[in-house]
Length: 202
Image (tube, rainbow, N blue to C red; front, side):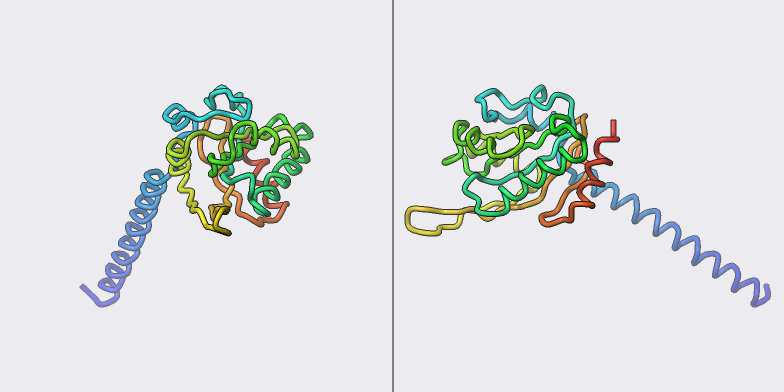
């Protein structure tokens, strides 16, 4: 076997090995993505006991087969929560011309202060497509953990406290499947594109 042929075989072997490694890497990444993906919204809702701002059970029928934008926060939040809710309300209304076509789900991480009455009063400051959700702290933690939400209490004075928490918005299609996220501070054109894509699914 001449040198040129040996080099060709060697090069072919390297290329084939590289392609195999790429395929295996992709498949492994896909496996990890599926393994770590949040549970389907309709499935996790059935495993927790939460209520909406009207005191009704928070369940799949609450979502009315519409896409949803899920956000975790608390009503005493000074900036991130009210800004996020206001932006989402305005943008969804701009995108759909009808703010009733997409749910905005606001789950409190501070049930000690955010009961259903307090949530109902709070969401009135925004457009009418926001669903406030509360419950006991164990049920809320179970729901938040499904989305990998971090939160912790931080004392501000001896008698008061605030929360540090994940500021990500989770996008969910009409069938309850996780479809991506919106980051805190993401520009409006990017959010509009993501919401438009979410509406096209299903």
